Amino acid sequence: MAVLNRLLSECIRDVDGLGKYLKLEKADEDRIREISERYPICIPPYYLGLIDPDNPEDPVRRICIPGMQELSGTGVEDTSGEGDNTVIRGMQHKYRQTALILTTNQCSMYCRFCFRKRMVGYTDQETAEHIKEMAEYVAQHTEINNVLLSGGDALVNSNETIAMYLKTFSQIPTLDFIRIGTRTPVVLPMRIYEDEELLGILKEYNRKKQILIVTHFNHLNEVTPEAKKAVDALIACGCVVRNQTVLLKGVSDDPKALARLLNRLVSIGVIPYYVFQCRPARGALDEFQIPLLKGSAIVEEAKSMMNGQAKSIHYCMSHVTGKIEILGEIEPGKMLFKYHQAKYAKDNSRIFMEELAPDQCWL
Ligand code: SF4
Image (cartoon, rainbow, N blue to C red; front, side, top):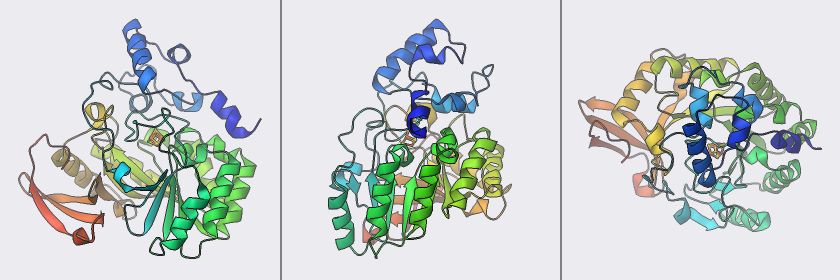
């Protein structure tokens, strides 16, 4: 059996499976069962093993075990206008230079804070179908200089599918690099370091086009020897590995925890580049969002404990109008913002100020 299939077959997908790893009250079991009918569970035993079973507030537990408020119904399904930016089924063209492809709706772990909860593990209606058609679009739009293979988790595709994407897009001369968006180094690192076939594919196509792995560590407890082994294997294949983190209540909303995570990532060869404001996604915001004023204070205090490489982060929100950087509080209650990436040219690099309510989490 292929490495990926074997590892996915071992994942825990229901309450009964969870009960073997964690002590759950009857009320918790009922709640998790109800939530998982809409927002699925999938957790590799390796990742479950990172939880301290005696700590109900354990950060890894918060990331992977359903919370009390997932079915509250507040928030929106599509927080950044992905439907409007879709040019071909499964492919979005929001920013001039980037094409984003939803290669799958599957992940090896369903993060409870995911902003694509509307689709991951649930429906494949938004995922890519025809690679040839997407490649023609990218080749014709010469302003596109990079493609982001996302999902779901792009490394949960079969090796054959990954190779097909890399083969297709590495042939387009106007692309400078291909990005792969994946949580696999964090939640299922052995899918990378045990899979010689996958590593061979990455090595082969890195010779043709630079591959950037954009991964997603959110807490220091996720940076294990196994995760480092996966990162080492990716770097040995010629990949550049970078990280984005989401600022999450009960996980990374502590300046020391955030600084420790980002400093540690630099030390294993993963350069942090975004800290994202948690989006107002249905099924996620009540559990995880923190106010912008508080978030900015956390990020600034964390920066005072970071090395220069870790400090290359941008604290951003992926807004329907673009990627907006949260620059800082210029006077009490007034926040300065700057478009880091704009959907509309008129907003390119535009700086603006907004007065924020203390509990305001989004614009
Ligand atoms: S791995 Fe990514 S796409 Fe999948 S659930 Fe987590 S955040 Fe969402």
